[in-house]
Length: 242
Picture 1 (cartoon, rainbow, N blue to C red):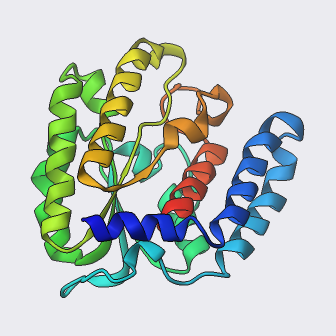
Picture 2 (tube, one colour):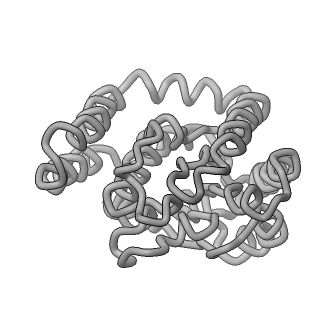
């Protein structure tokens, strides 16, 4: 695992700084120029993505019999893309940016224990080089608590590591309106996810920081991202995995 940490540091010393600038510009455009500017910016982001074809997280990694250019987006309805057309889901947008296969294995309504029960099947069936993990909000909604969720997320990450698949864990996106009652739980679970990622030396996609609790990135239900939010998810995942 020590080798992966060095790879991540190496990755951040290259082309990523230009992409970081584009990501920050995307976020600022929401407040300054509105939705009309976003399609133009996303096109620029796609062009930026085309410059690099290999994930630096993979440098020196032994994938075994897994396919290093296959990614599985593994999660609940936020991964699935509930409430929008499939072309706007984050796995679809991310696949276009990376010019790689990103399989959408989002399961609406799934808690983290469902992910833990499915992870070995997913790894066996798809043999992905990367597993992009986003579970937890349904645990909070159903009252299972943060500790149970983090235990399941640890299990999923370890299953990927044991399979020679690179796990990439994401913090939760924000909640608003009628789902705001779970905001404190989201904060606590995100803190646990960050700590777990550090302890396991697993790559972290900090969606919490990217969204910055901006309700304009969510649909009317206050839970699922809208098209802008899903695009920001794709940009934030790209920032880490490409």
